[in-house]
Length: 450
Image (cartoon, rainbow, N blue to C red):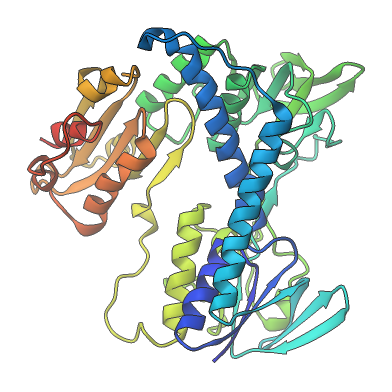
C-alpha cells in the first residue's frame, strides 16, 4: 500500500505513523514544518504564552497564599521558550516518523490525477504514484476584505507569538475561542486590551453561564468589552490603528489583532484534476471514514470542515490509517464529532463536551442539569482559586451522561472524565460512585454527578 500524505500536521503525521506501523509505504509532503503549521505556529505557542501569563497571575495572588512575590516579564526569554518548545515538538514528530520508516519531502504538493502527486521541492519537481492519498493541508487565518494586514500594527494571530514587544494597548477583533484566549493572554502579560464583541456575550456558541464567568474575569482584569459592535474597517495611524465599527463606535489602539476564523488551504491542490468535490467554503466533504467522493482520497483536519481541533485531526488520522489498511472491515466505532471534548485556555479555563444546556432546551429535549461551584471545593480553596463550577447534563429517565461544562482551574484535564462518560454511554452513578482523591478538584465531579 503506497500512501502519500499532503500535510504533516496532527492528522497527517498520525496517519503516517499508524499506517507505517501497519506496513504501508508512506510519504509525507509538507511545505512548512512537520508537526503542522497551525499546531506549532498557533496552538502550541499560544498555550506556552498563556502558561507564562498564568504564572504572572499566580504571582499577583501570592499575597493570598501567605507569600511576597513580584514578577517581571522578559520578552526575549519568552520568545526563546516558545521557540524551544516548538523545536522540541517538531523533533519529536520527525523522530517518530523516521523510526517508522516514513519518507518526508519538503515542498508544496498537489494532485496531478487520482493517483498522482507532484511535489515542488527546492531541487525541482518530484512525482509520486499513490494507491491512497490523504489531504491534510490545514488552514490559515481569515482576513476580511476590510482589513489590511501590515504585520506591524495590524496583526493576524501568527504575528503574535509573541510580537517583538508586548503591546501597550491591543484591540482584539473577534470574541470566539481564539479571540478570548488572546485577550486573556495579553491582559495577563500586561497589555491594556479592548475586545470587540459582535454579539451580546463573548463565546456566543457557549453556555451563557460559562461566558458570564469569563466576562466577569475580563472586567476584573480591566479588559474593555465592546459588545454588540461589528468591526468594518481598520485605519492605520501614526501611533497605531483605529478600528471602526458598524455602529459608529471606534477603538484607538497601538495594535490590532484579527481573530475572525480561518480558511482551509484547498487552493492549488489540484482537486479538480483528481475529481475531488469541494464545498463552497473551500472544505472537502467527507463520509464517516473521512473519504472524499473519490474513495481512495481522504481528507482530514481543518480541510475536512469538521471540528477544528488538533485532537480531532489526530483521531481522524488514526482512523484513516486503520481504514485504508483494512482494519475497519468489521463493526467498529466511527468518529462522533458531537462527543469531542474541547477546552479554552483562558483564566479560568473552560472545557465542555457533548450536548450543551442551551442547545438541549432549544431542541425541547428533557435533561437533568446538576451544578456544583468550586467555591465548595476544599482543593480549590487550598489552591486559592475557587472560581467557576462543574455542570453535568444527563438524561432524566436513564441517568446517561449527555454532556457537561467546566469552568475553573484544570478544567481541560477534568473534562476528560465527563468525555469518557459521554463517549461510552456511562451513567451519572458511574461517576458519583467513583472514589476520587481527597482533597482534589476532581471530587467536584462526583458531587456534580450525584
